[in-house]
Length: 244
Image 1: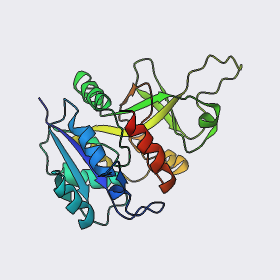
Image 2: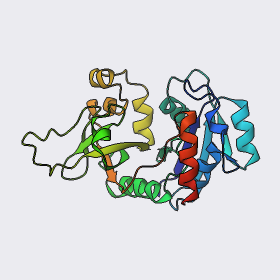
Image 3: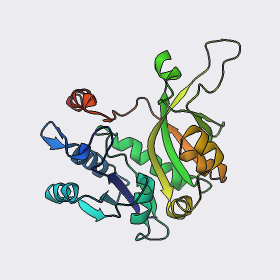
Image 4: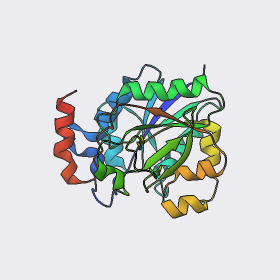
């Protein structure tokens, strides 16, 4: 069976929150919470913190993580992920676990892996949850996804999709979550492709895969994980961790 590696890209130089991976939540660095959650996933063989910063690497070594030191020139976390993937087995499944979501559910990670193993036609898999408020539906920072009847992504957008033309109120909306599982070859191909027209229009990297014909599976979970994007999100994340 394919080896499964969860990679947690972590960088220091966040525009909105420099040093974010090491901010303390309930006495532990943010990235340690993510690492611990990923390690609890039953289907994961390895969990690697991928960083270009020795402060993050040192902290990760201290709490026992496997660390990959990566190039500081990567424009995205996906490129950092691919650098790690180049050293993995050809048949590997590679997970991109966001380093700023400390309450990611281990069961979500397991479902991503299961989807790739059960459907050989999928090149990638990601997650989504029902949109809960009208404000989220209208918010362009909340990415929406629509799927076909088999649960494969048809499109991702910052706009409201699908459009409920008749105002029936029965239309279901899904909010995309930024966790991904890749077959290693698809990931390595992905980072070689130039940004595509829809990707550049929406500023959504996953559209590059759709435009190249990659089948993306979407698993639907009940709730989103809490993201720490800015300092004001820390208190909310601490409260969420207290409920686990």
